[in-house]
Length: 134
Image (cartoon, rainbow, N blue to C red; front, top):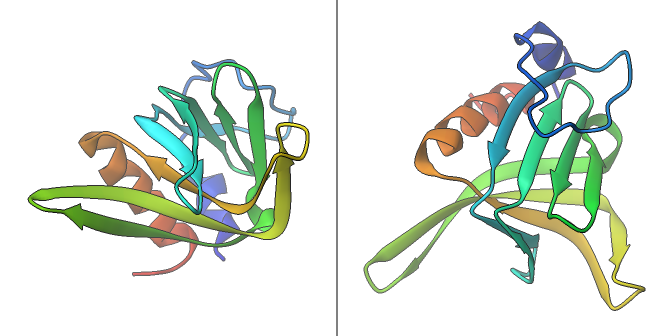
């Protein structure tokens, strides 16, 4: 993982007011069309994503999920699923731990993130450089 790539990115405004530390800088923000577990169980619609040089924060309006990029993420890939003539593009983040949510009712070890088209391109550029997929 090329974490130094995130440190070199320009800082952007923390428009969703993520609770970041002094040594973090926001490098990407976007509304998500939807996001869920790796098994496509919905965790939120119109959630807000903030990516810093150290963490990813996803706020669904009731809870904020925090993912430490270096310590928690195994990999992140762009994927597509097709149903008839409809193609959905999303990113799958695989974690090295199990996340327990909703008083233990939901357990998962990955997220899926659905962006609009422009944000998909921006996030893909970051992920490709971060994980050195190019």
